[in-house]
Length: 446
Image 1 (cartoon, rainbow, N blue to C red):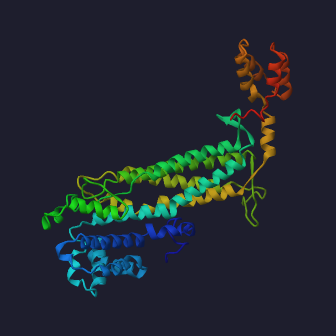
Image 2 (image 1 turned 135 degrees about the vertical axis):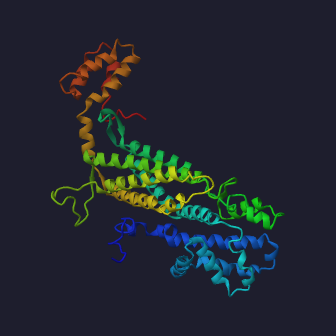
Image 3 (image 1 turned 120 degrees about the vertical axis):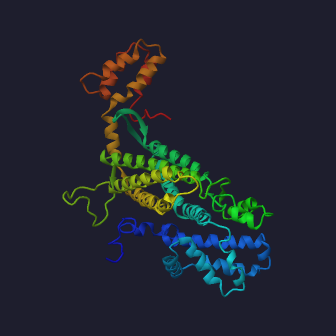
């Protein structure tokens, strides 16, 4: 079978491909190859600018042409690299050979052995991958999370004055306001996104075992650590100073864990919204021709929040595996990180699919204030906390026990039974008036 949306093995490249196509330039095989070419070219330019003695006469006017090799990188170029790899059986070496092949016609043909000079594959991979991830997060991923944050801020403002029965342990509790409950998620997302933004994009660049061995033996008088720092920083990354052949991945693990925490908050949001829909606090806007259930025509299921929850769960499972596995490597190098990192884009794809579903679900919500009002009216017992607290203030004997006795009778607590209870209290008329003013609709705190 030919690869298509119908025959793809994963839903990311099948059913949901259209939703995550913007991630392909970063996390696809094409994307990784393009970023490897970028690192190789920028490294060669950096050697020319330092300069190494043998590269001091390279004309800087050639640099834009060199950069066009990755700025104008095409699928045809990527396929050529894959053809070379079929012979070399080494993906990074294939990139080196491709660049040399492309630059043969430029007046630097005698300088081409300085392409990949002194490097190991991980000097390329461990700069290309954090760079592509940093670009993807900034260009495509964070804006999606920020859109959810903005949408929730709007809803919190819209519903800030809507009283709502709260539930602790699933039971009726002191009333709250709908907007405030949405604001809980606004604050949680803000704080975690802030922490996430502070995690540096770390890269390894230091030769076969991290010591610049080859560089130092060829040019012992050059400060290669300074060169490495400047080069990596020019890419917008932070160089890990003391490494093995590979990056520690500790900062990458921190980033993935941060995304996992943000996703966990969104799962919590999805479940709360799902529950509010099930309680009839929200109705969902109908879309012409859309079917809620294959068997029950009346149903409009909260499928968007369910879809989001499911995809966030997959994303978090992968984030957890990546963050737990990547920082571990036997001695100075093993290859387990290589195959695992090829899945780096998958949890982000599931996260984007989930976020779009959450946003779609939020857009469908129509507040059913009548249901919220009815729920409050049906639960006058929740004002018992307010009444006993004021009675405590007044020095009334055992107010908690008095309200406990009232609320735990078999009779339903109503506005009338609360009023009767207040009328029989041995307190001043002013305090009784204060107590009578308390209702489930106004007892919502600050």
